[in-house]
Length: 550
Image (cartoon, rainbow, N blue to C red):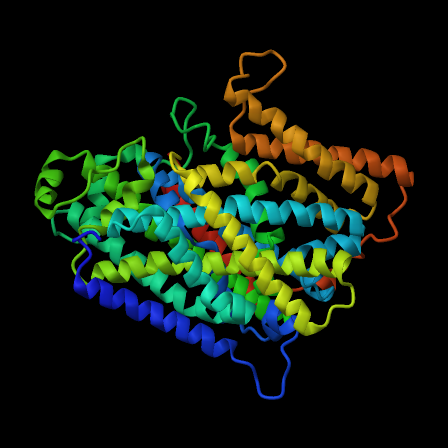
């Protein structure tokens, strides 16, 4: 193991691991005389308060793809990557006001279950298979890979052992305890995540400023790399294809965010486990405020690392610390692990515990949601419709374990990626536009039919692949269009909606579909706390974009 990880760092990290496992197993213990049922395992007995929901949403969301991947994008691109976080805050407000009331009213376990109630079992199965494949081969594998990459860089642990270790850690409590264990340990994970991340940010900025503090450090990196503080990239920026200027705000990023926060099982499952709609909406509001500060934890350190490695004087001062080779533009995802190497003893353990908390909480969340979809939407639908609660819970655990084993085998194959965060967004973007179109029209357009939704869902994949092949060697062909992937997502979503609309109208001759959802003003009524908080979030966003527009 690497000598830069000292005794006190190991002590801190081991204490963190013991705390998380202890709490997870304690929460998972069975109550005397009570047989754990599906609601207990998959929806935490519908008992989560708002603060646990908000914390769990952030813990499930912030993972290695943010700490490692988004810091890497901060190193390569700058603050513009923070749009994923800041726009997510506004998206959460929309989800809380317009989506949750419908989902909770219908008493859902899973997002595919909504598809069955609104459309059909066949479409539910198609989308359930989509999601399981996406979680296993993109989400779980990328989180395991990036987490293991951090452990390899910081502690010298070989990649394969890091993958296995993280997988076993997440499985230790999540497979047994279900969503309840995941959600309550997430409350602790978020404390480590935010505090540990802020420690790294503080020390990175303090180092950049030569020991003159955070504010001086912010001033220093702003003066040294002003191009890294532009939210709206110009056409001549080499990263324009990843973040295409104003289209980030009015185009495809809305597809990514609304799909992720509104229709993603491992995110929305927390809100479905709330005590009430009001608790769920307040949890969403807390998560929105936390999203506003996440760039300070994950993007600013990446920019600080960029300034450091391009400043010979700073690098000379750090040279005696025995650092690994500094990250390059070819491997920006090494920026965050590299920064952790020069934290003082003990603090490095806290910062690494924050990173581990982010990784493990997301793994646990993805495992629980993968097992929920497989068990409730595949197993109970097609294999054993009369499964008992004991059998259902056991199948949930087994399916999560199988998904984890597959992800462990695939994860090491991801080595060689440039910006992993962009990879995750890009490949998720192949399926998300079609799913978003199906959900939005199903929620808010009563004329949408099952046939239209199936045609749209199936057509969205070849449409997305049509745009995908152009950047991979086909862009010179006159029949292909080379667009930034966020724009690809926006256009794919619009074309999918048009297909759904045409098929639906031709089928029902302009009549409302029998399964269309009746919408009333009272359904979307929100309380004063949510309204005031939402207004505050929007004001803060306006201020942030005004300050860093260009």
